[in-house]
Image (cartoon, rainbow, N blue to C red):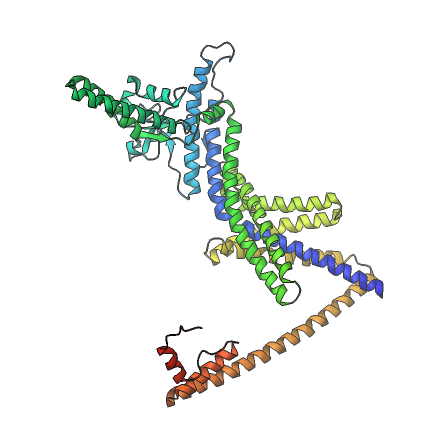
Length: 535
């Protein structure tokens, strides 16, 4: 009998552990559903970096003149013998900078929920389907084109990665070779690590030229003063039109020399941002759900306040970690799927399947880890893998339904996916339990059936007690309010102010609070008193 009780306790413990693990997986499924918006936006950002590398946009059905992969294959000679090796490398790094700039800007537009519009002028497709601005004389990059497919001047840039130092870059851009950009008031995009230095160099030149112009005018040398004034105006125009690129000199060189690594780093940065943003959402969701569960446990006396607080902190941290992993992995998967050659795969990228793939990978990893550690056997491993795969797929379906039913970002997807997992998990267990029961020995079946009958009897007893308590509480409360409101109605009809106050105060006491005043005279005294009214 003692051994039987111990065995029952062990089974109960295992059941509790399974329920906890199932609840955690359901929560993870909910967090995956809540990541839909973040994965979608940041995944689209990842896609732009993939396009920047390959030069092919399968989603739009277009190809760019230059992708980083193609640029990295340009010839530049042997680094030891070719006299123009460094010059060629720097020129090709300029092309890489243009491509990388466009990819980063388009990624930011996608992350902001906008349709990306930034493009290299080489890649502008006109109304006739042709590219008319390859090697445009004024602009390299634009964020807006007109109806005829021409770059809009105020939204277009010339990119110049020149000079060995910021000062050298300023001197070169003030030379006669760059006069057409000054004359046409073109915005000049320069390396991010040169921008501040170039601004300082221009400030020095402007200050010096202003002094010279003033001195020459004072000396009556109007012709020389006019020449210096022209130089001064040129410096001011260049300073006004300088634009800080999103790419540095070092990044441009890296993109030319190691295009794959450069692209991978950008994808990693975007995915990390997605993870951080979703981790905040996940912490709020996981923490909120944990807070409710643990408050109930405290009220039932199953946990102390300190235990509940620690549990909430732990659950919040886990939810944040899971959300980070889901969004990070989901964004990378989504971006890859969005630019896939297969139209079917691109269509799937429009759903939250990438987020569920990332979460499923995490869940499968947990199961395999338990198996390799020896915590579960092969049969249990296969059961869990089947359950989680089945549950996650159904969660994706119910997430879509939940979002339609509850059109509030995050909430609808969360509720839907949680419901989906709960329903699918329940149906899965009914099936697997039926299969397992068929293999029970007769004695084992009799024992299990006895325990089930005992559990059912206990549930019925608790349910009857609960229904009785609820019925008594509701009847007592309903009768109290019926009687009180009836008295309040009577006192209003008869003008009995003190009677009305007494009836209202009885509701206050019923709710466990203390009335502020008992009679109208007390109320009147309080209103004319200088003492503050305390509720």
